[in-house]
Length: 199
Image 1: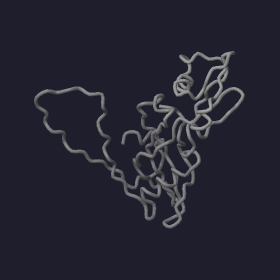
Image 2: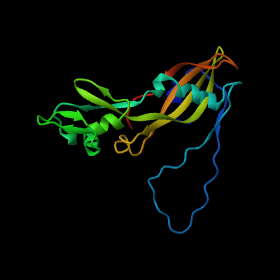
Image 3: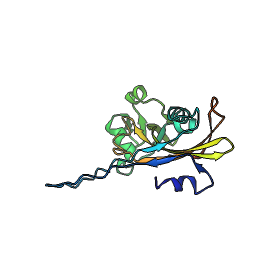
Image 4: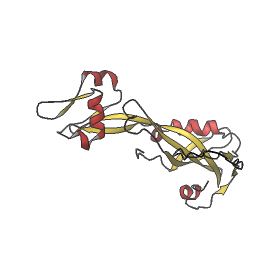
């Protein structure tokens, strides 16, 4: 894929195998309707080293704290116009926060019962809005010394609060280094860590 150079920085990693095939489009006749729906991504054919398959890579990435941590979005407690704070507007709509007489914001009883993982601070009430969701493996490169680099696609999976804030999640990328050998593969590190950008 054309994005691989960006993720691996054009380094010295030797590609194991990563090819893609696509069939020729059929000739279309009659009425043609333009659509904003993107064309399906071509499925990459990836060859893996012994013992490190797609399921193992996905598992090791999904249990890594950097990937597994939820996306938190702070709702300010100070008087704020909800038109300037989408998360505040959504929490008000769901009756998870309420305004006090002085304009400050307080979580409601419904929020305490239904919102898990929120973090309270003097300035804000931060609520989880989604988790990272593993999408696909784009390629695996031999990095030498028994190590391999995997280029992975993922996207946000919004929860009940986050759906209105991110109706159409985009793909993100990360790259991860694996080592340990055939029966002992582990995730050594993220070369390009999963970002926190909400898009």
